[in-house]
Every structure is written in structure tokens, then in C-alpha cells.
Length: 308
Image (tube, rainbow, N blue to C red; front, side, top):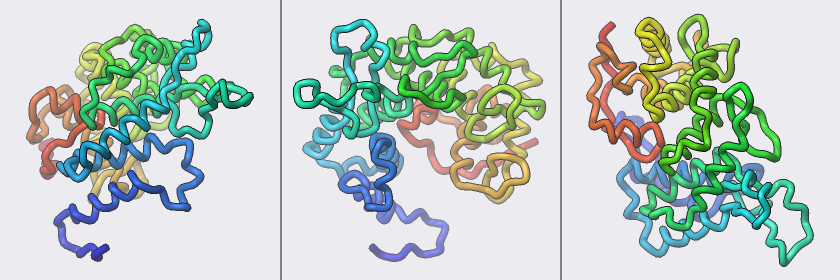
């Protein structure tokens, strides 16, 4: 692969080849990420989409990827409890065909992040979601909401915080069915997670963080509740907290080094109409903003020029 130069121009061809490679074979050093293959595939597929390069995948390749994703779907087995375990898994490692093995199905259950990235990948690839067990997936989402309004990732056990709340919101939005989420509890959890500095944390009384601020704000925007949850003072404080994270790039928290991922997390937050305020940002149609929040498409690469 040709070496990248030091210019400001994105090495588009190298990025495309990189993403293609990850859709064909994962390197040995990533063997520990086997259970999250679906999310890795999503990064590669959405990366190609952002680069306007999905055409490097021919129809046969797209169909193979789509069929692979559907094989990761956990569907009900006829019993009522099985509906709570539905969703998508990250790989086939823990999928045990009942007629071929006596392995325990305990860990054969959906994972919110994998379900979100699986559905998003299907949408990017042009699938009509006709093979998605919509009602079962929504039941699986509902089973993962905690009493405080947050979501855990899987019934097999995990932490519960803002990340998985965002994944749940994306699933409900893509399937156009919010019955899997107690919206009032969700909104309350987000409001209580806003810190004294107006950034938003993983959970109430924790430190503000760029990634979880995006997860919270994007969730409210997808629910069309952003202006309902926060006052103008809080939105203004949130805006200024986000702007204050910009140094050369963006940092995730005060007194931390910049990281490219926060250019997305905080850049996306500041792109939202309710947050942007007096920012001199080139906003596209509302449809594109929702695609950005779902990770399904890109907005033009423009300088983040601010006026405060």
C-alpha cells in the first residue's frame, strides 16, 4: 500500500483499501474482538459510505454481507422468555444450532450495540429489513431498560449507561417503534446525568464526557425531545461546554489531550440545530442530521467555525 503523505488531503484510496480489508479478513491481532465482528463491519461499511465508495462492493459482496448479518440475528424459539433475548449478536461464536449441539443457550442473546450496528449496516447496504424480527427485537430492547432509565447491553450481563441508551434509541428509530423504551424514564436519566458544567456523563454524578454527551443529545434529538428536556440556559451551557473542548482538535474532557474521535462526537453535537445557536455551521437538511446521528451518512467536511 502506498505511503500516506503529510498533506491536508485525506488519503481516500488508502482508507478505502483499509475498510475493504476489514470486510474480508480480520488480522490476528484483533482475535480478541471476535465477539464484536459486527461492529467492526459497521465501521468499515459506514466508512465506505462516508467516502462515497460503496460501489467498491459489488452486489454479490453486499448480498454476502447482508446474509451474514442476518445469520447473527437471535430469534424467538417459541417460548415467551426467548423474546427478551432477541436482537443481533456480534459474531457466530456463541450461536449454537439446537439440533446440532447441546451447548447452553445462556449467552445466545442479542446485544444492543450489535443490534444497532447490524441494523445500520443493513440500511447502508440497501436492505429493506424484511427479514428483521421487528417485534422480537423491540421486546429485546424493552427487557434491557433498567429501573433508573438506563440500558444494559445484554441479558448475559453488562454495565448500564448512556452508550447503550443511545443504541436502544437508534434501534427504536430505525424500526420506527418506540414501544421498547420508557421515554419518560430515559429523559429523566439523561437530565440527571447533566453535570454542573453542563456536559453530560455516563450516569448521574459522574464526570462530563464528549462521547456520552453525544449519546445523550443524539438520543433526545431522535426522540424529538431535545428542547423539552433542557432549558435554554442548559442548552447554552451545553453548547459552551462543547466549544470549550476545541483546542487543535477536540478533547473528550477538560485537561485531556485531543483525540480524533471527539471531532465526531462533539462536532456532531454542535451540528444539531438546537445546540448550534449562533455557530456559523453549514447545516444540511434535517434528514441528513438524523443520518449523522445514526452513523448512516456523512455531512460535507467543512471547517468548524464558531462565533461566541
